Image 1: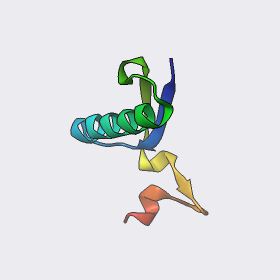
Image 2: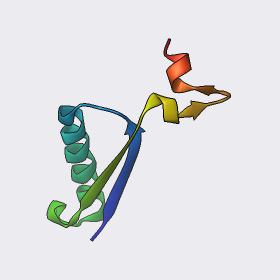
Image 3: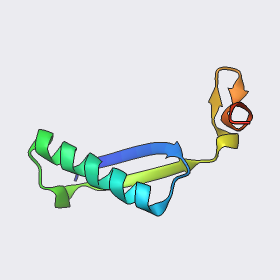
Image 4: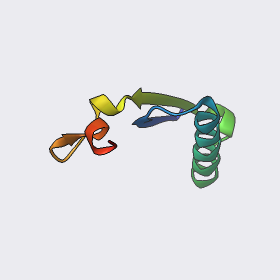
Length: 62
Protein backbone atom coordinates (compact mmCIF):
# COMPACT_ATOMS: atom_id res chain seq x y z
CA UNK A 1 0.00 0.00 0.00
CA UNK A 2 1.84 3.13 -1.18
CA UNK A 3 1.30 6.29 0.89
CA UNK A 4 1.44 9.82 -0.48
CA UNK A 5 1.90 12.51 2.17
CA UNK A 6 1.20 16.15 1.39
CA UNK A 7 2.09 19.00 3.76
CA UNK A 8 0.60 22.36 2.83
CA UNK A 9 -1.20 25.38 4.14
CA UNK A 10 -4.94 25.16 4.65
CA UNK A 11 -7.00 24.67 1.50
CA UNK A 12 -10.59 24.09 0.45
CA UNK A 13 -12.11 20.63 0.20
CA UNK A 14 -12.31 21.04 -3.61
CA UNK A 15 -8.58 21.79 -3.84
CA UNK A 16 -7.76 18.79 -1.63
CA UNK A 17 -9.87 16.52 -3.82
CA UNK A 18 -8.20 17.81 -7.00
CA UNK A 19 -4.74 17.44 -5.49
CA UNK A 20 -5.39 13.86 -4.34
CA UNK A 21 -6.82 12.93 -7.76
CA UNK A 22 -3.83 14.33 -9.67
CA UNK A 23 -1.16 12.99 -7.30
CA UNK A 24 -2.61 9.47 -7.25
CA UNK A 25 -3.17 9.41 -11.02
CA UNK A 26 0.46 10.41 -11.67
CA UNK A 27 1.93 8.04 -9.09
CA UNK A 28 -0.23 5.18 -10.37
CA UNK A 29 0.91 5.74 -13.96
CA UNK A 30 4.59 6.06 -13.07
CA UNK A 31 4.72 3.17 -10.58
CA UNK A 32 2.26 0.97 -12.50
CA UNK A 33 0.21 0.36 -9.36
CA UNK A 34 -3.62 0.58 -9.34
CA UNK A 35 -5.00 3.88 -8.01
CA UNK A 36 -7.07 1.98 -5.45
CA UNK A 37 -3.90 0.82 -3.70
CA UNK A 38 -2.83 4.35 -2.71
CA UNK A 39 -3.50 6.11 0.57
CA UNK A 40 -3.09 9.90 0.64
CA UNK A 41 -2.56 11.90 3.81
CA UNK A 42 -2.97 15.68 3.81
CA UNK A 43 -1.47 17.61 6.70
CA UNK A 44 -2.61 21.21 6.78
CA UNK A 45 -0.55 23.88 8.47
CA UNK A 46 -1.82 27.30 9.42
CA UNK A 47 0.35 30.20 8.16
CA UNK A 48 1.20 30.93 11.82
CA UNK A 49 2.90 27.52 11.94
CA UNK A 50 5.05 27.88 8.80
CA UNK A 51 8.29 29.85 8.69
CA UNK A 52 10.15 31.00 5.62
CA UNK A 53 13.57 32.41 6.28
CA UNK A 54 13.22 34.37 9.50
CA UNK A 55 9.50 35.17 9.19
CA UNK A 56 6.23 33.37 9.69
CA UNK A 57 4.18 33.14 6.51
CA UNK A 58 1.34 34.92 8.30
CA UNK A 59 3.62 37.98 8.59
CA UNK A 60 4.77 37.80 4.96
CA UNK A 61 1.19 37.66 3.67
CA UNK A 62 0.22 40.95 5.35
